[in-house]
Image (cartoon, rainbow, N blue to C red; front, side, top):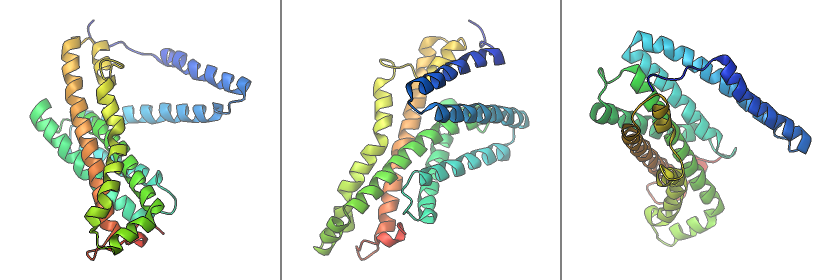
Length: 265
């Protein structure tokens, strides 16, 4: 197979018909998910078509600053999404600062290393590589950071009295929070671990499948997928650890006191 299979809007409409069938079944069976599915599908179509159109323009320009601007907007959206998944009682300013700092640093560092060591496009900031790779990394960073931060803050609220008691008995904040941080990090990275464990046996990951459909040798496609899974999983794990430790630093002071007021209203 050479090249890729061109999809027309008629082909896409056939796929959409499956969602319409689900909507009809939802109405017949009184499940109540039809409206949610339709809204999600409409957002999917509009967002991806818009992104595809914008990327055509960005790829044509081939400007480092233009690519960086696109990535920066993606990072802002990811940070906002992380905070949106937290409880309403959390102070959004500091939560956004923690999630945005970790998301930005981890994503940019891992993307830069991957583009300059493993992939090596010319130039390294080529938008065709820089933006898609950053997007894949950012999606997993957002998921891991969101799960870890939410898990940690939920545990702090639930075990506030226990934490205060341990600190009052002379335990340092590191001794007190380490078990909670471990649980939060495990919670955040578990989807990544499952994804790596199931790849190839249970599922064929998206990048590998797409490259095979585009005509690439399956063995070469597997090597690309291994590289990408290791890169995005490493970024997700670093993000989970980063948001957990920054949250602990914000929740305590240099006298090892719990300052829950700093992150909760």
